[in-house]
Each structure stands twice: as structure tokens, then as C-alpha cells.
Image 1 (cartoon, rainbow, N blue to C red):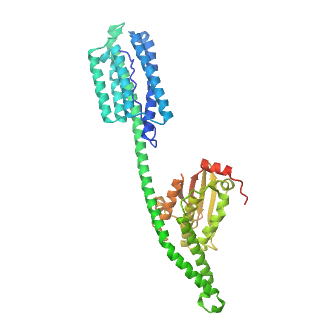
Image 2 (image 1 turned 60 degrees about the vertical axis):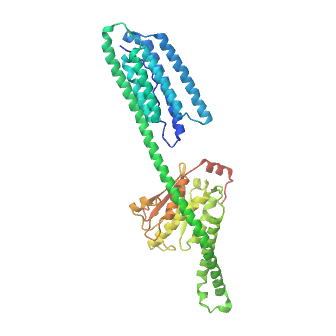
Image 3 (image 1 turned 90 degrees about the horizontal axis):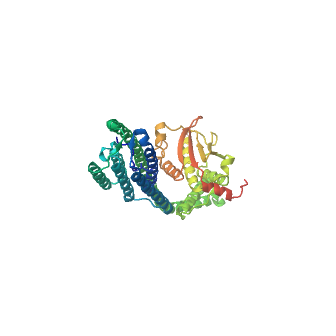
Length: 459
């Protein structure tokens, strides 16, 4: 009988999830190959010392021990290569992985030569290695490995050292038992490695699809940004003209010598017009300014001015805002958060107005900021008609026309900005009627450092 003593180190399974680069995949493959080789060396050493006593088979110890020693040295070299790649930020190439597999096929062939050659039932251990190699290497290299394995197998049909059986009458039984063990081992290895490989490939495909969608989404956002810049440039002149006209009308209305003019009845409206035009000019000034990174700002220092600016945009609306103490001390990217919350509050105000609520007498809009574990949660609550489930699922994913005339572009941009910050926007029903928009953003190490570096804010 031919003992179950096989030293073919099979190619490793695929690297973990793909959000990593292919180079990292190769590095993890080499690391798994090294681990598997150590495991097989340990198993073969155990068989070497127990085979004669358990199965009555005398093995050629000296050549087998020499082969094990050579493989041990080679695996130490493999571990050194792993450290080298890790230290230099490189990764093994396909050719290097192929050489590793070629060495294992050679070691398997040498061990089979001393343990019965092609009559050893474990000779089919060539197949699991080739099956896994075909899944992780280019097909040309797999063909080369297959041709090499075929040549080794063919030579073992002609040249090998027969095993020394203490009881030759048990050879058939030993052979059948060896074939069963070989099938079990091969099936387990192929199922384990190929299943892990298939799972990793599915994860890679999913992440590639997600990356494509993200790139497409960002391309759309960039196009909208370009349109916004063009609109900002074009709208500057008419706004300046309106500002001049509004100023002249207000001056006429305040002129005591012309108190009989009908314009005097609209002084309050003219002041509101001038405020709105001034707000437009300040927005355009920000659009024209260079894109510079703003330092994080504490929420308790930013919130009140933000609410004041938003109220200027919606003088007829009522907004109540507050932050929990543990959230108020956080430092955040107020530029992008202001953009997201402005869009959210604008939509909430329009929804509540469409529901017929009087902003001065009806329930106010609410902006609540809280810290939950390692995230900051911003909730905008309105008392409008609410959102149908079908519309809620599409909001933020693409421009969607709304019942009060909007096109959903603002929420699309807000969702994109939230994802760039590592967060997400979601919508929930308000138990009192209306909708709760929830912006959840992770706390970052930079924010924590910014908090520690800033002095305590005294409101």
C-alpha cells in the first residue's frame, strides 16, 4: 500500500474582500500559501514517524527527511519574501506565485517518487493544486503548470521506488483506503479554497459595481456643480440690477417730499427684497471664492449663526434648533453640513407650507443634533403631508419631482455630500404628522483632535 504521505503545498485561496488592490490580493495569497505549507509539513512529519507502526509500511526516511528540510528552508525564504514585500509596500507578481506552485509540484513529485510513484493513490493530489491555480492565475501560466504536472505524472509511471510492505497481501486494502482518504482530502481542499475564492470574486464584483455607481453619481454631481457655477456667473448681473432698483424704490418711499407716492405702502416689502438680494450676493460671493478647506468649527459656535442665516432665507418660517451637550462640543465640517441642512430645511419649509400650516402660528420646524455612539445625528422635523414610501426610497438617489414643484436635485446633492463625509441621509415618518429627515455622520479622529485643541466655548 502507498501511504498518505504527500507534500504538495497547494495554491492559496484568494485574498479577502476586494476593496483592496489586486497587489494586496497577491500578498495575501502568498501568505496563505506559506501557512498551508507549514501545515502540510507538520502532517507529513507525523505520518513519517507513525506510518510503519500503524500501517506496516517501511519508508525511505533519509530522502524524505531531506525533502522536508529543503521545503522548510524554502518556506522560511517565502516568509522572508513576505516581510520584504510588506516592508517595501510591494506585492508578489503572478510569476512569483507560479514559481511557488511549481516548487510545490516538484516536491510532490519527489515525495511520490520515493513512495510508490504513480501507484500511490495520492498521485491525484496534482489536481487540487491545478484547480485552484486556474482560479487565481492567468490561463497561460495555468497551462504551463498543467503541462509540468502532466510531465511529472508521466515520469512517475516509468520511474519510482516501490514501497516496502511488511504484509504484501494487504496492498489492495491499503490502496483502497488511500484512495478514500485522497478523495476526502482533495474534496475538502477544493471545496474550501474554491468556495472562498468564489466568495471573494463575488465581493470584488459587488464592490466594482458599487464603485462604478459612485463614479457615475459623482460625475452627475460634478455636472451639476458646473451648471451651478455657470448660473452663478449669469445671475450676478440681474441681481445687481435688481439691487439698484430696489434701493432707488426704497429711497423714493422714504423721501418725505414724495410721501404721496404708492411706493410708500411697500417699504416693508422693499426692505425684505433688499435683504434677499443681499443674501443672494453673499451666496454668489461664496461661489466665486476659491475652494479652500475650512477648519472644523464647534457646533455650539456655529448653530446660532446658521439658524439666523437660514431665517433670512425664510422670514415667514419658524425654526427651533438645539444640540445636546455631548454633540454641541463636537467640531465638524460646517461648510458641507450647512449645505446639507440648508437643503433639508428648505424642503421641510416648503412641505409644511404646502400642508397649509401657518409658519407664525403653526408648529415650528425643528433641528435637533445629538451624539449616538460614534456618530452625530442631525434630525430635521416638519409637519407636512409626509412622504409616500415609493418616493422616499428614491429620494437622494436621483433627481425626483416633488408635489410642491421641486425636482429633487437639492436632496440628490445633499445625499452625495453626506456620502463624501462617510454618512447617510434617511427619511422617517413623524408620529405627529410629517417627515423626519435624519443625517447620520461618523465622528472622525480629526474632529476629536480639533475639539481637544479648541478652547471651551462659552455661549
